[in-house]
Length: 112
Length: 116
Image 1 (cartoon, each protein chain N blue to C red):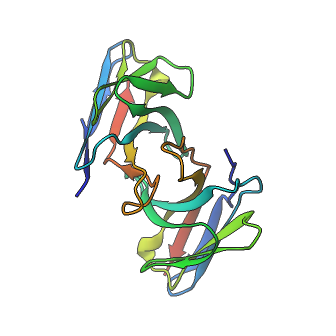
Image 2 (cartoon, rainbow over the protein chains, first blue to last red):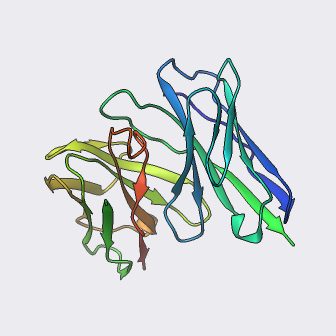
């Protein structure tokens, strides 16, 4: 399983764009990258998933360089409600099962 | 649509007492099921995962056990709780379908266990 490394914490202000980078140097060919958001006393929830280049949905963008050894979650114009812990996971979605292990995550604090 | 139910939401138990946390999934069949634990201020630790009825894999040695008596039911148990078992327990499911986001985890609301 590819191990992931993220910054422990980040600070931002309302309205700014936030980019959180995750390193996964030993990512395998069939591995996809998935990001989750967790608020206190709740389970993580899915944000975005991608394999290469760029993926965008209504809440975030995911940038993956050609070598796929890292990925960047981009949150446009964050608000106070984006204060949470963000996790990146790497796993093979082409098999019937994947043991999904979370790293330490990045604690994002958005201030007024 | 798929839903996941987890109960009880909160539990306070004395050391040495038994534990049973239950999780059920609706709206899907043959899901992969997971139990995670999160200690206060810490990350998520994978405890058990299951790919089918009666098939349980354990990630860490501990006094907890898991069972999957039915396709969409996952139970976390202990015969004698330790203080170190306190934490936030999360059940999750995933499925290999593109429509749902392959191998994307969907979590329950969690069960907060305090062992005194």
